[in-house]
Amino acid sequence: MINPDCIFCRIASKDIQANLVAETELSLAFWDISPRQPIHILVIPKNHHANIAELTMNSPEQLVDLMQLGTQIALEKSTGSFRLSFNTGEEAGQTVFHAHGHITSRTPKDQIA
Ligand code: 5GP
Ligand code: ZN
Image 1 (cartoon, rainbow, N blue to C red):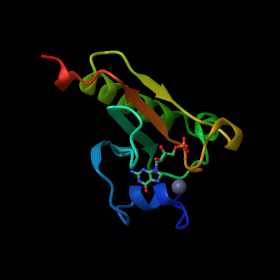
Image 2 (image 1 turned 90 degrees about the horizontal axis):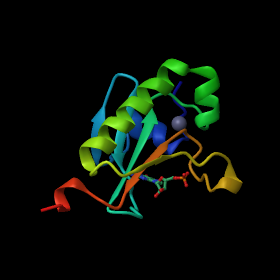
Image 3 (image 1 turned 60 degrees about the vertical axis):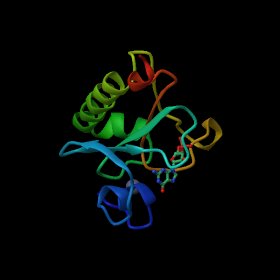
Image 4 (image 1 turned 60 degrees about the horizontal axis):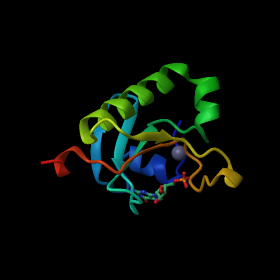
């Protein structure tokens, strides 16, 4: 369920601090520590799954919850133009092996006059 050696498990259990955005019983969203776009928020399942493929195959209920939370945040924070993306595997650029979606957008709602 929770892996003590995993940084995102430690964020999910509030053992390590993160700039939280929102949470449900199953999922947590927080700002990326080194944002690459004006909006760069991560959404994770609170339980440990190594990547989105494992989450999809093993825990569809948590997958839906994560997608709903990620989409809701993206719609709230952006003007409606966003990415919700999942690097899966080292060669695809995954560096933290706890499933996470990147919510990114160049068009934050609060920058539009
Ligand atoms: P990946 O490359 O695995 O798809 O994405 C990992 C993301 O996690 C990176 O964008 C990185 O900046 C972010 N990250 C890594 N460690 C931490 C951390 O301790 N706190 C937060 N908020 N983000 C982190
Ligand atoms: Zn984990």
